[in-house]
Length: 227
Picture 1 (cartoon, helix red, strand yellow):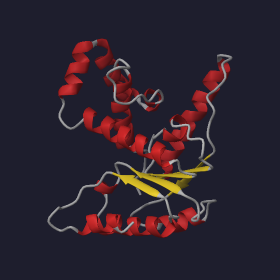
Picture 2 (tube, helix red, strand yellow):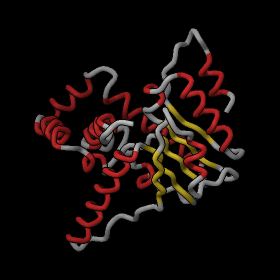
Picture 3 (spheres, helix red, strand yellow):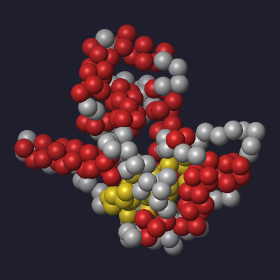
């Protein structure tokens, strides 16, 4: 396991935070929480873009395969989860993903965020700080959904065993979100995780993920189609 919180998770938050500054009629995604998860460097970069106004937005839009890809990926997955109306939501490699707080899906009975313990700990610490900030300003804090945080090292531990220790129900329709993780794992690790998801999913469950693979080999597409 790595020794600290994920820098990639913060990097993705920066993209969502910058996108949130765009006018409502043009932005792809609005994540009001993204800025709060940025560290000092991320906030400096954010305000550099903010200070330059239209020029900063133009420059960010011209960076290939960066902001556009991240926010488009996130929006597609948001829409997919909403459309599936799940009773359970499992977010694998959750990072600073705030879908559980943003989507307000009425049918949801349980939410599970699976990630490295250091990243999960920083996220919970920052959320507690935001909650206290609202109280200090005599404001009503946003409703916090009942999230269960589960730590898993996908390279060493089995997802099914870690979820089995929680209140996860394998007979309940579930939406699985696996964003920005598979490309950092080996093909066998991805295949094993897909097999576990299939094994733990009730009829009507859905999986949305982004994935990188060698099209010439064809093994991962077959594994995905088997879910």
